[in-house]
Length: 89
Ligand SMILES: [Zn+2]
Image (cartoon, rainbow, N blue to C red; front, side, top):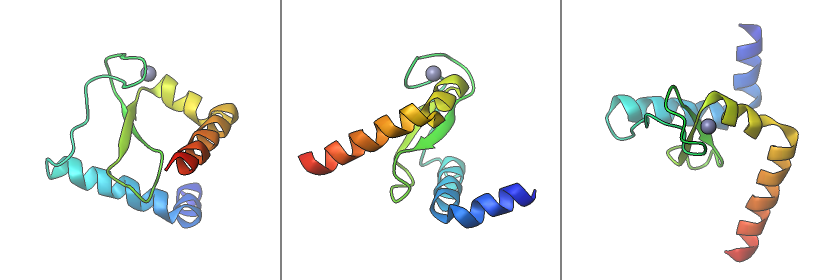
């Protein structure tokens, strides 16, 4: 419980983005797809935010793809991709 609270304090944007997604699903504005967007595996998928300032811009990933995204090399790759996007834009 303490860990969850700490997490919310350290990452307020993330917490807010997750709440926005939950609300949007309830309100019918956002749909949780039946399959992972990366590998196509059917089952439970979690919302993943690339940018917490765009709370409804969500990637839906299965657990294994989501874990891979949390891996450092994936994070580094993501940062490079984001930096690249900034240059392109
Ligand atoms: Zn997957």
